[in-house]
Length: 343
Figure 1 (cartoon, rainbow, N blue to C red):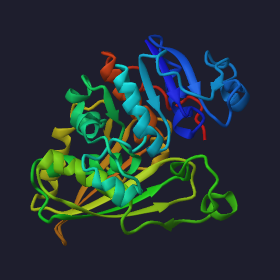
Figure 2: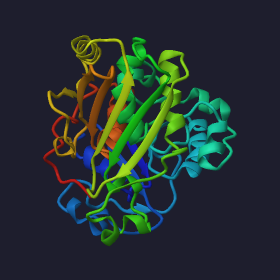
Figure 3: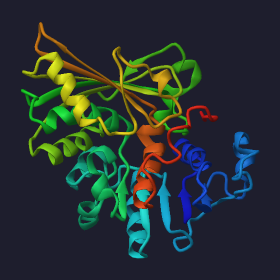
Figure 4: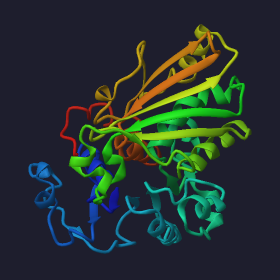
């Protein structure tokens, strides 16, 4: 099976390459990076020097013919056009941008600042959260790989929303993310002297992940939930915590049972008796989850921990790849936490 990775020098591209090291069924025919075109992978990322990918050379432009499956680790707007071109050539695409995640095209104008004109492809794309949509993912040619915040948050909400035990339509979410979520580009708030020892909220109103989360909740419930979402940056490289609070009539033991039943067969879920920590999920595709209820206020508290570059991006993309390639869904993905991670 021939694979190409566009934008392979970004954090998500490098994480994909780390995950793909274990695969014997694939051949990487091309990696692209305009910044590093002409350089070998091992020259830019020395931790690949002894790997089977060490001699791969970054190319500037993507060949639309040479691979069977394309991973796109690019900004949103270039991905819109590239997905269309690849699908027209009969290729399968796993897109790690937000270009095809939201069904309502107006959301792109309102939250992303560009007009999305390929409404037919938006409807055709399958949201790549396997725990919710694996049956559709298997036959998809456009997989819209979820964002990290929506992954952590949606997984925290899905059982309760699916079973209709959320009493109020506004749900409060506070999430913490490592700095790698902002990408490799240089941005002042993420420079080491400004980020080290610091933590702060950003975009507390109209964050671009809100329509993505609400879109998925609408798809699984048929209801118009509203997410009151506040993201925070914390001074770590990678990892993410999402704390979700909602009103529910269920008692604590029934709420926990609901979640355990829903996720009992999921290979990447681990239930925790204590609030989860990001150190336990770094480098992995696991989602650690904690479920509780404050009987004094009637609030459910669900906390998830994921690696924002793993289950929140590239390793989830490989989980989707396994599905469309006809491989066991968890193949090669359970034993990655001990391999070298970057950053």
